[in-house]
Image (cartoon, rainbow, N blue to C red):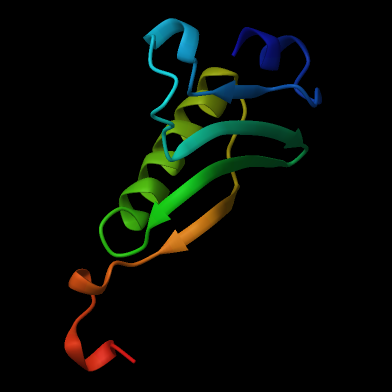
Length: 104
């Protein structure tokens, strides 16, 4: 946040959410990899990177979480978030979660 205040146009505003050396767990990788914050006046872009996402059970929560988190970070930096860009490597739904009338 302090770096965003000093240099809002910087390209290195990125928060990684997985540090195996901090947790001691290297085999379990989280679905969310990190968040990048880009300011190009008058727009504030949050780019969310996800390795994997369960469409039925978690996608709406992941989007809401990213928006709330991004808005808070931009606000603390004195900027405004206007866009969310969301990259997901593997978007999936498990058969058990899909209603019968939607299965193919």
